[in-house]
View: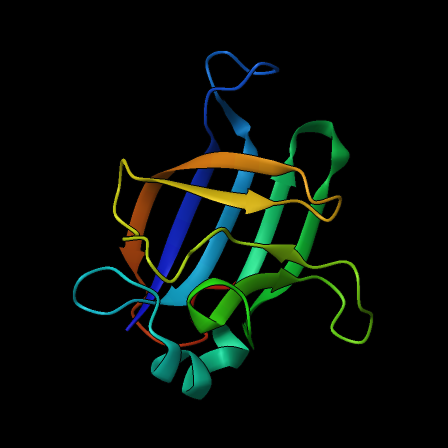
Length: 134
């Protein structure tokens, strides 16, 4: 089942209170326990889109991808330009995390700097493709 997941930047040195102006919106399949579902992703990958919003920098749009290798045998990443290597942002052990409100995850930006995000919303998408990024 596809879900629309909203992440906001957690507290950091630069943002002591966190920031709702910095984060991601991700459409991704989750299993009953709230973990990313690789099998369903393979069937619905065209709908697994990502919108990155980062303050005044503007938005970036990409897709959620799953690559072999890395910790646990695979790595979930955000790819902004599928024909170009080097612009991906890797999630830190995303295969182990539960995507439920209040939990935290880490994503490395394309400069490999890690940022921690709080999951602020997880909502079921009624129909694949119905939830489009603005």
